[in-house]
Each structure stands twice: as C-alpha cells, then as structure tokens.
Length: 395
Image (cartoon, helix red, strand yellow):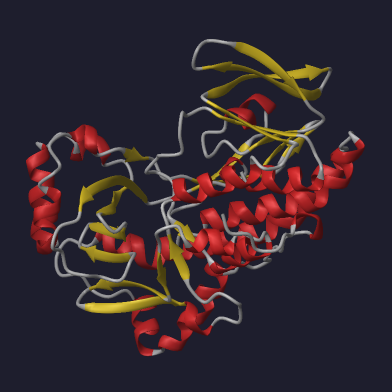
C-alpha cells in the first residue's frame, strides 16, 4: 500500500491486488514506529492519522523473573517522533488506501488473487489473476512487485530461493475482550518458564501473542481449550475474565514463525520486498517498519525507470543493495534476542532466572536507547521522496 501510494504520486500507473475482502487480519502487526510516523508526516497524513484510535508508547518492556526490563526506551532517540504507536494495522491500511484512491493513477482490486506470472521468455511481464467471483484476467506491467508476505506466491513463481534462519519459537494469536483489567501500558511482554506472552492493548480488547517452543503446536492443542484458559489465568490472574471468552481452538490461530531472507530479491521484471524478501520474527516488532522502508526505497529508486516504461535488472538490484544491510542488522539483533532471552526462558523448567542480557539492561537502563533506535528508526532510515510529499490535509 505504501509503495502503491508513493508510485501513484510520482505519476506511475499502479494496480494493487489484495486477495482478502478487507484488511481485518489479526496476524498483522500493530506497531507503527518512529521512522514510519515521520514518513506519515512527510506524506501529509499526520493529522488524519492522529484521528485514528491509537496508543503511543515511549518504552517497550517485559517482565521476567520478578524484574521489569525496559528493553527499548524511545524517549532518548534522536528522531522527531519518540514513540511507537499502537494502532490496528487495518486502520493504517485503510488510511493509506483512502489516500491512494485520490490519485488518478492508482487502482486497488480487493478479493483478487494472483494465480500466475505472465512471461515473455525469461522476463515477467505481469500477472494472471482470479477474483472471488471467479472472474479471471491479466495485468501487463513493466514490473511486478511481490508484497505478499512470508508465504509469497510471487516469490515462489519467480523461482527466488529462500535462505532460512533457525527460530526457537512459534506463536498463537489470541484476541479476547477487555474487561476491568489491570491497566498496563500498551504492548508488554510477560515471561514464565517455558512460556512467553506479549499483550497489545486495543482499547476494548487484548491481542495476545502466546509464544512456546517451536514444534509444540500440535502437542499443546491436544489439550481441551479449558486447559489453555486455566493456564493463562494461573500465570496472569487479571486476564482470567478475558480469556473465559475462549471457547474453541478455532479462536486460537497458529503462526509458524519464520526468519528468512532472499539472497536475490529480483528476476527480470519482478521484485520482492517486505516479508516476501525477508520474513522477520515478532521479537522487537520491526517487521512493519522494515517493510515500509523497503517500499519507500523502492519507490524512490524505481519511479524514474517506471515512468520511462522499462525497468532493468540493474535498476532492481539497487533495491536489494540499499535494503539488504538493514535487514541483516535487524535479523542479527533478533537472533541475539532469541539466543540470549527467548531460548533460556523457553528451556526453563523451574524458577525462572533473569538472563544475563536482561540483567545488564536492568543495571544500565540507558542501554535501552540503542535497541530503540535500531527497532524504531532502523539502521538505514528512508524518507519520502520529494515527488510523494504533500502538505497536511484533514478530511
């Protein structure tokens, strides 16, 4: 959506295909980070975005072994916005879609799924699609961009090989109503022996990531749903009333957490960005921000070629050259979190000891500004190109 909006503002004809009928999907992250908030300013959407229900956090923390660890402190970063904004991603996507719809070169096709890549020799020349109503069609284009996530069909059809990185954790995503619960500040982690939780406050509900050792999904689902309710209530008593709403395992979708990246992001006529190019762990929540920055770099680097109607492989290689380094840095940071925090917690059987990395941050809280900058701004932040900038407008 970000790439479509930016390219349309450059005068490039853009069609975005979304296979779902709406944007209401809980697997999508709710974090909008400082560099993305700055991008929203540059696009002239700040006042509109401020009207979307949200909660701003200056600190990300987690509770472990009786200690509260302030993992990332955004209040000290050198950036215009010093918070992470918690906002349902469907609201963010709807805002972008509404704004893009004002551009004459932009088209959004909902309930429309790519089925094949069109080719002329070894060059991708567009896509074949099918709508929910069964209508088929083709779109011919000088460039097809796969933004279709960690299970990218575009990536697979283009034959781009994936390098997988070991991950020790899987997750369930639960959404439960919020009652008279303890008021915690937005997203917070709660770690117990063998179990980890991340809670996101959506005002009238909690979105809960329940993390457990990779490969345990089927075994854990052999229990009755009442056992899950009881486990959560025993570990986090003030959630007992909320989790009583869980009546079926159908309410507990499974997320097979993957971390991977493409060594080559493109082939002639096709490019992958975001999770399609580099799936991220939920650790630290940088995935949305990284994908947005990919989109901004792609628009800036490729708009001139697209306006000419021809994009070379050399042009496409510039996107990976620009974005591969921040991807590597953030995936390396996530790997450290996995090894130094996640694995000790998930392996713990008795009393949970605070991992060394967490003890260091507790002792020297000023260290929290460094992960805050890496997560919230990124190793190589991107700004909106001049052709995409607009003064603020309020509807």
